[in-house]
Image (cartoon, rainbow, N blue to C red; front, side, top):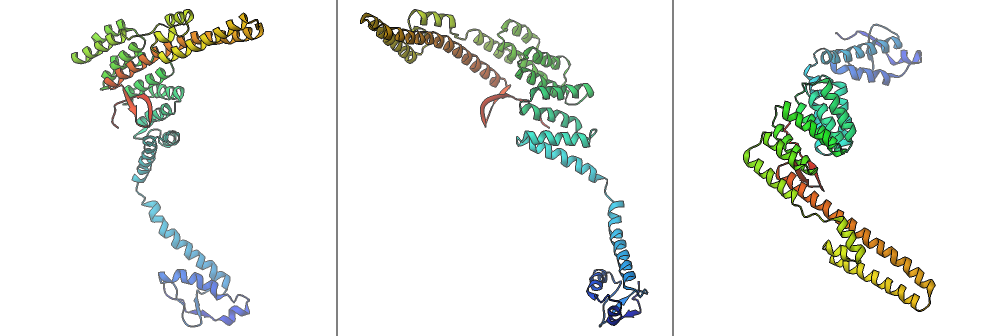
Length: 359
């Protein structure tokens, strides 16, 4: 486009009351790099139109046209791979949050991914990991609903075995142990992944927790495990059957006969000495009060002694239960760690079920 030959000096602008050349210079400065106009001398080269308002209109028109001309190629020639890149970025971000234990945000981001890309390349994995994030927040019922929905909608999902395994783990946490083992046994019957052996170990571990060692031995014969591992399981079964449990009934009876005797049976010598001393002291004080004719004090001390006596029996029974629970917990944790079902968490002293799968 050539330079315009029509000039309007500043006196004309002043005459029409539009003596604002700075406004024109602003637009001309924007357009000048593109070779459309230039400023020379004390005059402003304009288009053929003599009116200032028409000039501004034309400048805006060309300016917006240039802006559209620059943006149009980027809109028309955009790379279709950008949408795929956005999908991958969304999934990667959600997975990053899951790996860094930011489970609440991971749940939100996996839901966002599934809303935007319900048929995306990683939709199956996102559905599985969404349930995993819910599981880690101890929302076990929501995790089960998520995984069961996945299995109903996409029964051929490549994460079928993993989904069933972790759904069983969620049932286990809710105390529904039989349902958990049914899912694990279903993996043994229908599964095709390396999780079959892990599911077999989980079933045996669950039966050991329920002290159903005879049934565990029967299933062990049919499970796809090596002979050496089967022998190791059998050794744990025998160990579980021979755990040195303490009888709560015996502990309570001994405590009733002689305060402190129940704790002595439980190998709690210090507790036994305290219990015997306190009960003996209050019993002696109560008897002495009655002998001295102080019936009121004797009655008060008798009630206090009865409280100590009852507490002695309750403490013995409760301690026996605690000892038995600790024996079972230590046994099951040792069993689980031995066969790779349980692993110590570095940030927590508790244990959690490990799922061996590489994404």
